[in-house]
Length: 398
Image (cartoon, rainbow, N blue to C red; front, side):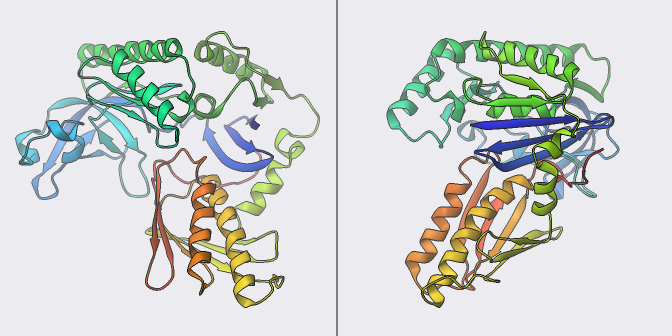
């Protein structure tokens, strides 16, 4: 069971996701500044840089967006030219084109954009010209994977690409087809606006709000609760869910208590603890969490934990506990880029494997792309996690 808890303040909306009473996601979105990731623009090329095989594109933001050559070529690898052309052969300054933001502007860098367009729906991700069908790797049963791939091949046109999402497991073909029809219509609207728009830069399509994205991606009306303290937004959420869930009744509770919503559910207290630099583990060990521009380093320490039968056992138990907590915190803090975990040294290879497995299992619910790369010669565990938006900073209620 999941609980989506949404607090609407005067200047921003905060959302917390609890899974089995564990806080696993947190995000805040300011009323006047919705994120750009996922949105479509008609942009104008301002500069082509052959040495970097990239171009700068004006999309109407403070900083020009960055377009790599690989994001300009055909999205299907087999349909790309054998020799990668120079970007100057494909783009010229002043040229206008439709681009989609795949990565928010971070620090001194502008947004990253692509022409590999994708529109996520409830059951699938629609790619207008990718030319293939894929199924989420998190769907393990081969029979179900084959069923979904067959449905995708039946529904798509030759040039279209589809990715069947994890939530599509056991979904009916009719629901998938309806989702696809809505996404096709959305794409045709974007294309039409791109043709009709008089000049670039201009916005063609804005991605869903933070609350809508989370409802689309994780909410199940049969088991989950949506708790909001704003009746107006609750009405909008109900209408959005009704259009997405095809008649299923969403379970929305409007909170009207005297205690602030995040305080009533203990969210503020948990966030205050989980966003500290030093984080205590339940068994007495602790983590030290340091983030730089280049990477995030997490140091594991035994602290007050002395409960093992011997030193190796104490270290092993602390590392297991740390792996579970790191998996939750990486998702909660939306940590992106390179992540290095300095677990306490373990002699037993089976223990190292078990710690890796626990970390990997803990990340199964993470919707952001991530890879655990393995142990370095110095005994550090390396992983990467896609960075799309600025990491959230918890500052309490509005």
